[in-house]
Length: 260
Picture (cartoon, rainbow, N blue to C red):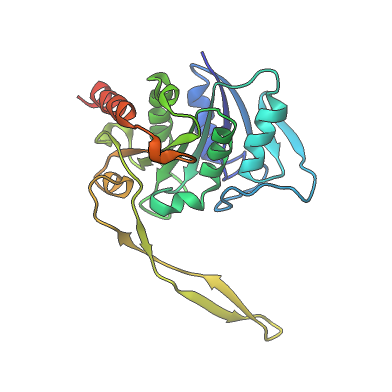
């Protein structure tokens, strides 16, 4: 049984983080420190110009006034001080963190902050096909995340690296498998909507539309499109020297265990 710190960027009350915590709680000891409000697409921001507040939601569950990176840092440096977790798992993000989108993600920012403090980390996202607000299969992503922890993949991570997991929004029985992937590239338009407020002053909405991904069969984008969960390693510092061959073999073994 491991001690796992969980965070996200959708907020401590989001459905994804609660499904993830409940699944991992079956086999591990869990501490949750997550934003009190939604902090999506805040990347790796930290709060350095104002104090942070913590609110106890329930036993072992804390809401933090800051960004996801703050939550990870406060979780490690304060909430679990003296009882350091073996792993940090973030998510389940409401939507994809594929390709270059991972650099905008607060869910990945929280995992990256943990990696900076030498705690093996996994960021988890559920890739929606529609904009519906209910009926998503968070339990599928939670199950795959639990498999990754139980198979020991996080113990194979080099220092200063993390795993990024994206899972299709399908029932577990319809998931085709798990692939080891590289970071793909998603294409967006550069559309900006210009509008005018009641005082006649212009304001702007970033309104770029997704226009598909670059067709490389080795990438996370391609794997998700084909119905597979994508496990993508992300090196932070010195990544040019990382050898991912053992991780790739472990992912292939994990796929064979659950889908052969």
